[in-house]
Structures are given as C-alpha cells and as structure tokens.
Length: 118
Image 1 (tube, rainbow, N blue to C red):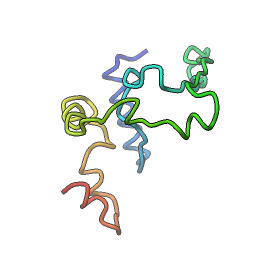
Image 2: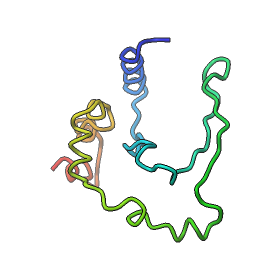
Image 3: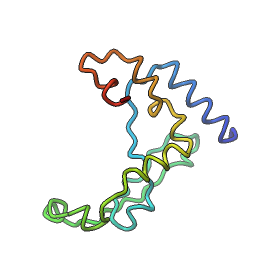
Image 4: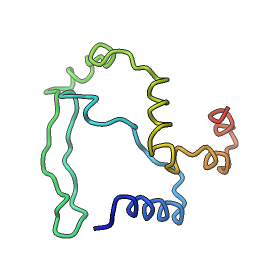
C-alpha cells in the first residue's frame, strides 16, 4: 500500500488525465450527523475484498418519517463562513474540484464559473 500522500498524488494525476468534469462531495463527515445518517455499506473494489462492508442502516423506518424530517430542527443552522474557513485550511482546497482555475477553464455558456469565482 502506498503512503497517503502518494495515493493523493496518484488520484490527482488520474483525475487530471481523465479530465473529470464533475466531482460529487458533500464536504462533511459522518460525525456531524451522529445517529441521523444512513450507511449503505461499501462495495468490494480492493483485492481480496478487504474494503467490502455489508453494514446497512437507516434512521428512518418509513417514507413519512423521511418526509417529516427537518434538518434545521435536528442539526441547527450551520455557520457557512466557518465551513468555508475549514475547507480553506485543509487539503480540500487543493483538490481539483475546489480549485477555481478548473472552473475558469471550463466552457460555461451560462457564466456559472464567473458567478462562482466572484
């Protein structure tokens, strides 16, 4: 297994070579949700299935509970400025999907990159 820094470099090189146009990430961790989060397990990708996890859980028992869920009541209002300061002070700011130059390079007829960068 490669050291974490080497893995990050390899991941970034692969993403650059394949020119990913979109990355999905919610930029928060499990800890912020406590018991109010789902766990869908993890598919098997690594050799020997060492990364497979069959744990499946959901805090809701029926669709009505999901529809009635109020995240502000459950978690309170979030400090968005604090979230951005956290992102700016960690590795997240170095990733391709957080670099503004990547957005500026994209062909954006609707001007989305210009709006986000300003």
